[in-house]
Every structure is written in structure tokens, then in C-alpha cells.
Length: 188
Image (cartoon, rainbow, N blue to C red; front, side, top):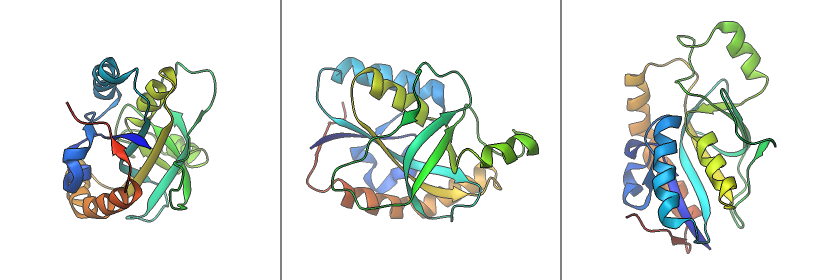
């Protein structure tokens, strides 16, 4: 099996960063990265695998989840629900619904009512996955995503960065085992 690994920033996957295509934080950066990537690889066969960090309401910090569905806090160009593929032979992991937003999901950005309503629809949150999913589907590529939970919407960016530094080794070990024996789309 051939795969292309994606993460937002190097810190999320530092121990394996040399094997991962980085998109940058947020949907705008992810869009630009995916345009460049797909221009080079659109005719190749591969599965897109997104790994990285996510905040959550109640999922335990440090747990790794298999994203099964993505909802978005903005425009979606797809008519159908964003249901993710599964990687053949992957270990069984807890499944989660992810909310992909244009900004850091926190009480400083969203109202308490919005966050309470969101808790009924999504288990965890990031800022890039909806874009990666959209590109995968537009180019006919399977899309898989695994996230490690860093916080409960209770940290600022400095604390998030500290936690990412603590958790990236665990995520890298998981990803290394997950992709064992698979061919990677090389970085250019």
C-alpha cells in the first residue's frame, strides 16, 4: 500500500517529521499546501493519512482516536457527509467525529452555548482536516485520519505547544507502527 502522510506542523510529528508532508496551521495554509501537493501527485495512486493533534471536550488527553467523520465550521464544497475511509489492517482504535474550524476551538473564541451544542455533534476539533478530506475526495484518494488529544479546550497556545512536545513521541510511535511496510509518497 502507498500512502502520503500529512500533519499541520512539525512539532506534532517531530520524531518522524522527515516522512510527513506539512500543511501549516489552518484551512488557508492547508489549502495552499494541498494545491501544491496535488499538482505534483494527482495522477498517482495512494491513500492520504492525516495525523496530528486535536482538542476535545471529554476524550482523555493523550488518547489517539480514529476520525470517522468530519463536520465543518464554515463553507463545505461537498454535498455528502465527510465520512472517512479506514486503513486496511490498522489497529482498532476508538472512533471520533471531528469538527474542523478556521480557528482554535476554545471558550475565548466560541460562546458557551455554541460549545455546548458542538459537544453534541463532535468529539474533537482541529483546523485542517476538512480541507485535506475535500482534496482527497476531489482527486479520488482514500482519506484516513488519526488524532492525539492534547487538551479539553482549556489551554492557550503556549500550553498547547508544551503538550504537543510531550505527546508527539507517542503519536510518532503509533504512526510508525501503523505504516510499517507501506510505501510513502516522498517529500519534494
